[in-house]
Length: 301
Image 1 (cartoon, rainbow, N blue to C red):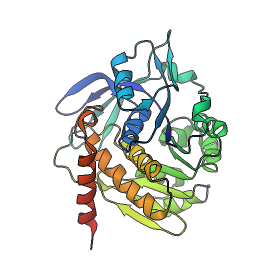
Image 2: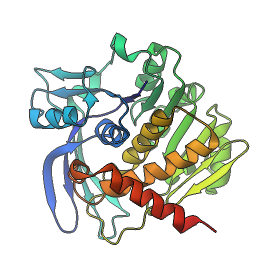
Image 3: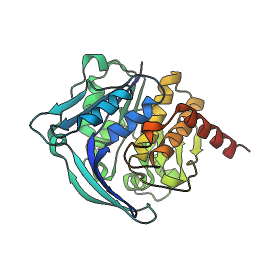
Image 4: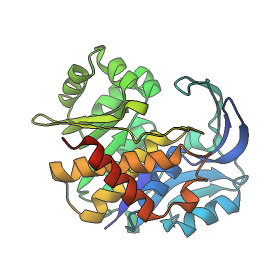
């Protein structure tokens, strides 16, 4: 059983109103894998790094129980680097630089041991790459994918083809509006369903997320925090937490998906309390369970 995560593994530079950090561990694949690992199911990571990628970072991922057989190190290449700056309220982020490096020509091949992994999360990446993973997989039980505005604008045809092959699409509110041209998020989500996914989950940052299928609607609140340090990777942590929980209970019912979204919200709440994955290094599952219980009480009526 377990979760297969396909995403980026990066060295990030992040600026906030209070601090700047350089070359810290980041990437959609990292945040999602670490989040999924809290649920004690096998987690496999597909990605690529350069010769400059610190072994201390890969050692941490191994300690988390993440299988790195699918993480390729290019001995003569440089790792993907990204830099971003957050505004005072953290609602606006400017990209300072993006250096694709080894990611630019990465064409992943699934190890045989990964092909039968039942739960697949395709973190933000090119639709063509995401589709190639689906074509290599053997009868997965659940395929969830993420995307972003760049792919919507630049590779729309490939993205449309991808959506016909996935079970769940996760995207944020502005991306849903961009994809459909509709400012009403509910209508936008319903329109995306017609492209093929059985479920659309729209992330709304500090306002939580909601899920739409042809027959259901569910809204998950964000966990309330009084202090935000670094929101980078929160959306990937949300998705990874979801996938980890689903894999742990081996069920995909509506009730399970709703619980999974709450767990995803909780795991993401730890993510934003420190830079990179620093907070996740010391999170105990009892803390996750406690916050899950708090949210249950908060929305009960």
